[in-house]
Length: 489
Image 1: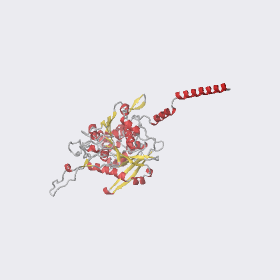
Image 2: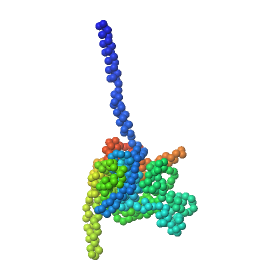
Image 3: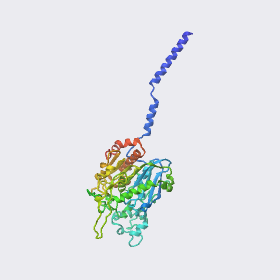
Image 4: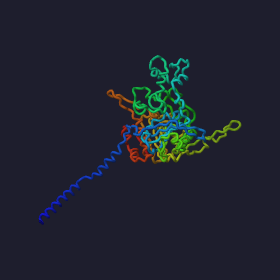
């Protein structure tokens, strides 16, 4: 009996020891599972691919705000996710001579990734673009009133494109051909009105990264723009001057700059007032766009802008600006004003703004800015330019680097893209090459712009640590094979 008990105890000890050995040698499944989970939640960001986000985007374009102090009504477009949630807010300031309904490519992209974007129509917006129709073209250019346009009746800058527009080859542009021209622009797909969303099953606009064929105008933007007066070229920076003088003419589409006049400090301050009006009237905006209810995260606000809009972002972000004093004259007409030299730099910054993105930014010696102006930009800032980003003699990428160069350290990024022009930042379509009968994208410039700007907003407005790490890394430089890179300090 006793030997039976001893044997049972020995057998139990042997079995327990074997189980302990197995347990000791077995890997820790929990840690491995957690590692796989973390890896799955933080996929690598490919700068060459900037797909739309998963959120459905809603656009409301008829918001109007009244500013009694300036006796002004401000029209605002709101672009935001349809899904419920609290989203950071981005104010986007369009370039001079553009308009808010023509500046929605980036706002729509950001909104699809979880942001509310509000786009004001500044006083210098190009209103005529919104009204451009075949009828208005005929009324303006059809001198012999025969209901069609000859080559000689077109503006000179359009005559070189006459053969492409004259699709039936009869030597005239009919109303149908003009309708085809005007329907290429605007928001959404071809033939849509500004602010109109594509219908179910309808092809979306090519500027989302798809091209519908070999279209010469894809390289030029909206051909209807050629019917409008080109904005004047801003004058090259004048050292020691508060802002440029005069209005030099632009040299083709590639040379069109900040708008119909050099950067103007008074206009810049007025543009900033538009942005502040939006932030002051969140309740009214929600009243006119009920879909925004409970979606505005006003504790996390960013400001972005292109060209004059970038200048606007710099000002509201803290850049000090010198506004010229009003000219005064005595009874004999002699100027008795203290002049621009007597004006002092001032700040129109808004503490509600937490980060700014300047696409083709302004440098020193224009618009009341100098090298000292940028030292007061304390919040996170990203500036972007490219090797072909020239908006006038002397206003090249080096000049546009100054905002970053003279700003203090801390959360500052500068993106330089080889080959990028001023138009690249407005949502130009990518170029395609052909290989084996298939189309292959050859220009990823806008993908780099979209990806990098989104990571900047994710890092600064959402506190995304992975986005912050991405900005500090070299993924952009590696994926672009050195054509695009981020400078940081």
